[in-house]
Each structure stands twice: as C-alpha cells, then as structure tokens.
Image (tube, rainbow, N blue to C red):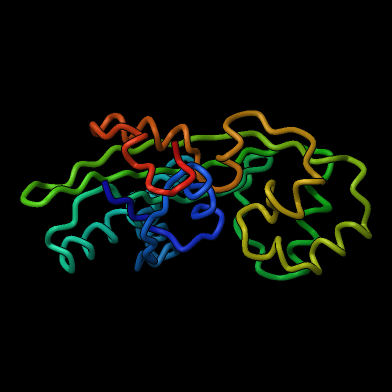
Length: 218
C-alpha cells in the first residue's frame, strides 16, 4: 500500500518515518489565503480554527489526489493532507514570519496555555474507482513555562526555528524546553495526530500496519 504525504513539512515527514512509513511527498498547489478569503467572503463570517484547518487539509489532499491520478493512472494507496494553527485566547496565531512578530508572540505566550488545532484529510485511491475520503480535526493544549526569559526568547528567535511554524514554536526541537505540558496526542503539536490518521485509514478499510514500509517497522 503506497502512501503519499500532501505536504513538504519536515515535521510531518519525520512523524510518518518514525511510525514506520516512508511516504512519497508532494507539495499541494493550494493558495491557502485565497481559499480562506473566498469562503469567508461568501459566507460572511470568520472561520473558527477547526473549520479553517480542516478546509485547508481537505483542499491540499484533494489537489494531490487529482495530480496523482492524472500522472499515475495505476496509483493505489492513500494520500494524507494536513494543516495546523495555534489559538490563544480565541485569537488564531499562524506563522510569525518575522523576528519582531515571533518575539512579541513569545512574550505574550509565556506562562499561558493555548490550543493547537490540526486538520486531517485521508484519501484512499484505487484504479478504476472514485477516491474515498475521511477527515477529522484533532486538538491539543500547550502550556508554556512562565519563567522563559527575554534572553531565551531572543536566542530562540535568532535560531530561526519559530519563524515558519504555526504558533511560533515546536515541541520536538529547540522550543520543547520552553513547554511544560501538552494535553492531547503529542504528535498533534508536531503537525499531525498519528492516532487520528490511523483512525481515518481504518475507516477507509486500510489497516495501519499495512502502511509500514520502512526496514525498522515491525
């Protein structure tokens, strides 16, 4: 059973590899800001975080499914799409991009708890049949240490790590030392809930263990 990750996220790729899966990795061609803006304009509302991440996860997976079935008529396997965002006091916090934004973010987050929302879309693709999809959202709360110093924040921001990740933090790398508690599936905070993906593959009739294809699996 082949597996395609509809993402080029190193964190999501690492998670699958640690779980015994070596996937194909394809970058979805989705303009995330345009997708959200279109829906919010049409519906006249701001999408809450769970709808936001699920919409993007489904669009990303669907885009890669379309390209795969066009380019590889005999492709058989599953396609996994995901999207994440961090919420603090009802405010959605995406990637900060700049050092100033990341610094302000961390000064506001220390000693507080936020929620990481992660959308998942899994497609089962088989030749001669319409693709089948299952989707879900997972969430985990993250509590930051209250004694993180301004010097530590400055050094962490200078590392560049928090600039291009949702919420401006990681739990599996340099940022992990500043996090005191995670409630929920820890892999959700890394970028994808493995337990959620396993449940979705099961709903599609694919045993999780049939996806193991790395030498260390099993």
